[in-house]
Image 1 (cartoon, rainbow, N blue to C red):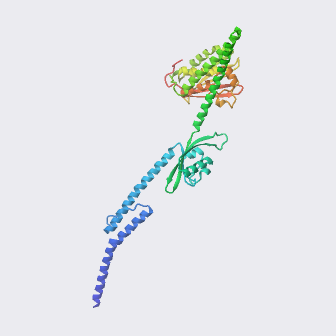
Image 2 (cartoon, rainbow, N blue to C red; image 1 turned 90 degrees about the vertical axis):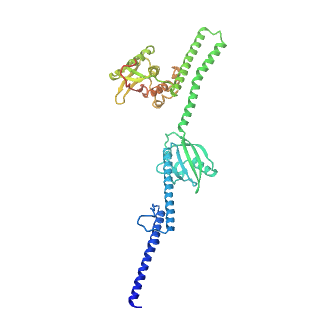
Image 3 (spheres, rainbow, N blue to C red; image 1 turned 30 degrees about the vertical axis):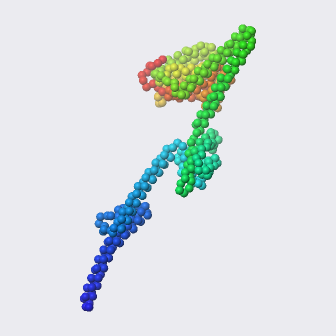
Amino acid sequence: MTPGFLLGYFLFTVLVGGIVWLCVHRRWIIPARHLEATLQAMVEGRPPGSFHRRGRPAAPQPFIRIAQSLEYLTDRYRRVAEQAAQEERNLRAILLGMVEGVLVIDAQHRIREANAAFCRQFGVRGNPAGRSVLEVIRLAEVHTLVGETLQTGKPIEREIVFHAAGPEEPPRFFDISAVPVDRGEGREVVAIFHDISRLKQLEEVRREFVANVSHELRTPLSIFRGYLETLMDHPDLPRSEIDRLLITLLRHSTRLNALVDDLLTLARLESRRLALDPVSLRIGPFLRNVVADFRGKLIEKNMTARIEISEEAEAASAEADPSRMEQVFFNLLDNAIKYSGGGTVVTLRAVVEEERGTLRCEVTDQGAGIPPADLPHIFERFYRVDKARSRDLGGTGLGLSIVKHIVQMHGGEVWAESRYGEGTTILLRLPLSSGEEGGEE
């Protein structure tokens, strides 16, 4: 063989080998690398892209089938992940919007999840996840409740009392529902904290109300029974003694009737069954009419009523029901006369508060005043500063509660100011009329 033949044969072999290698590279190696890149993207959680791209050489059918399966799995995984993420967002939105506190607790009593309501309820700062329940809220009852739920695997409901750190803060009551949830990695507990402090407070108010009503009714009824038995057992009593007993019975029957009327009025006010008929009420003529109705009582106690109405208030009108506002000012003026000494002055004032769009009215007496400790409570039902004196004067203990409810039904507010030993002022605000001036007098 000549050297030229050998060189030609070598070149031919190299050329054929190169062509074969190029074909193998394009047919197998490049698709294999693309398939490897697709798998790597899936491992790293990145979108793998399509295995088929324009300009790529045709891959063997096994590679194509594998790539198509991988793309299908990737697309399905993406949809499942998006659905799971959406469900998680929905769940978090529900937890954030719940009024009740919610805890998810694992088998080691560690908090896995807590919503914002729980953190507000117990004053927890930051995310409590990873900490134990006992460490976060320091309530052994909750720790025990979680343990019992994990052990029995049954829902448990229990009421607890939470005492805040501040000595002046009242205790708070919670109804806790603990529900076991079996997961693949173990059992967990979902605890829901429902704040029932308001319900407890209302229950206590109801008990006090029943006790107060019973006490208020017992006294006149006992007197009725005793005096009636006296009249029945001693029909020959002197006429003067019989008259004295009858006068006492009449006085207590009047007080009992007033108590029942006030109770019915307060019940209708609190249930919102008492409808208002508001008009544009001219406050000047209205207050003068109220004082005129009390002229007899004022003369009887040698007292004077002074009316001070600003020019703006004289021309202004308030949106108010005249009959209900009569109840308000009758109660206030009656209290001012009852608890003031003879020769004193009761002052009624009215001014317009332009910046608020309201009319402020005041009733000031020169009585004994109210101690600072009692002042926040005088609008509560049956609350009396001087219980014995109030009953002697015929008070039911409901007048200021009725005043508060009527004023609030008008969209106003009422409060008291007092200097003990010098007198008391009851102040109330009413919305100004939006209609024409004039109105009811």
